Length: 397
Ligand SMILES: Nc1ncnc2c1ncn2[C@@H]1O[C@H](COP(=O)(O)OP(=O)(O)O)[C@@H](O)[C@H]1O
Ligand SMILES: [Mg+2]
Image 1 (cartoon, rainbow, N blue to C red):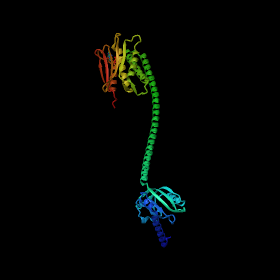
Image 2 (image 1 turned 60 degrees about the horizontal axis):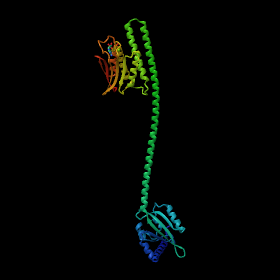
Image 3 (image 1 turned 60 degrees about the vertical axis):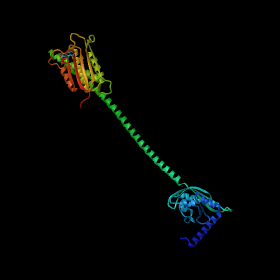
Image 4 (image 1 turned 90 degrees about the vertical axis):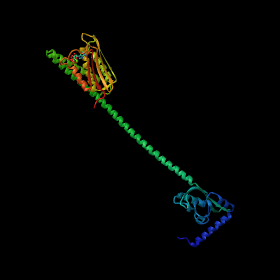
């Protein structure tokens, strides 16, 4: 319904009347209110709509409306779309029950700029105790609210970053736990495989030893069945070599090491020498056997080659170097020489005299083993005998 223009005019003139009456009656109080920096408003609740009947200059400055635009307006024209409806309800309720009100409210200036104010509204009564005015003062807290919002936004950003980072860390932690689980499992698996392999190797070694023992007994049978001393000697030599081979294997797999693939050569050669020492009769230990090795580890194949060369050379020394019950010594050495390893078997016997016996096999075996090691063989036999093989420490692929 459109307002009656005559009624509107009447209301307007009545409001103006009251304003001038207010300003006239205010005296020094009005002058003080006019001078203060705190925006203030007076409304008239006795008129429908509770129109504004007075604003001071600070109010005009804060909200940017002119006197004319403000006068006669309901006080709620200052609320923008963002004002909490709850705030409006509270103000209306306080006005109805005639009580003072203290609130922080978001309002809008004429330019649209948001203005946060701490607002105090109190009822004013006349001498008879009748409500005649509402007096409202505002304190501009826009800067404080903005600073608070900024801090809040910063806090939110910070919190979300912390949450993100925590999440990432948790994910990383989970990933590591999972990885740890996989690793533990594969280590367990590897240990199981290793122990299985150890059992298998011992089994294979056991069978190999049995087979060698069987071969030796067959050769013995053959020696017994024929009368040619040359054949007998050849077969004896073969038996000796097979026996040596059996010992080499035995020593290899008796190692305490968990690593069945590599051989600690110093320990291995010490054992080998002790074994050959036992070949001499206990009451006639004329020939001293000793070994001296650097800390060298070799794979099984090359360890066997080294052991076979050493075995042949020691056998030769025991057999040929010390005739007529001479005393002496055999030294086995295994040392680093730059990138190479030098194996040497040296005795202080008579040296190699005369030409090689036809059909002899030991030296040829040594040559073959040296080739397998990619090594260079040198044989010195002028006064004493020294067999040396120099081979690369690293396996060539
Ligand atoms: N350490 C040594 N001292 C003296 N003579 C050796 C030594 N090693 C080898 N010989 C000589 O070299 C020869 C060839 O050795 P080898 O090929 O092993 O044959 P075998 O030992 O069967 O006679 C031997 O017969 C021996 O005369
Ligand atoms: Mg020989």
